[in-house]
Image (cartoon, rainbow, N blue to C red; front, side, top):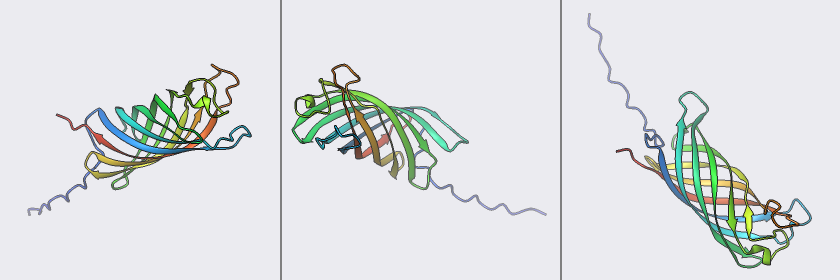
Length: 187
């Protein structure tokens, strides 16, 4: 007696799967100082653009963390309050991506960067023209097509000169960004 073989159900597409090691992105954001200390008084607000180049270090098969990535992120922008001052620099970001939920992929970021800005001429929170920015946050990617995603993220960012120029008070800010990432298609 022969058994009937039913055709397999089609697999749902994995929008974020890629065999490439590289991805590219860009995001824009708004950052606002929040005052946990009495010296955070200027209410600094910034608009930024961040071009990105990501290297996918590894993909995990059986973990809640699906992917580990290192992202080189440019920082271009400026303050819009209380005075206008440009920002230019770079940050190295480590990203852990979670499992896919349909087209949604959650992630966690942590990293640090350095930037040049004349902001110290206008506010009391920072001194010197070189500022360091340790940061961390979380977000989600929404895949609009295979290997193409909208990115929504929140980060907390600390800015100070790491003691290069006293008194080095520094400040903390919340940053909201929206962007787009595209994974390089394999050959």
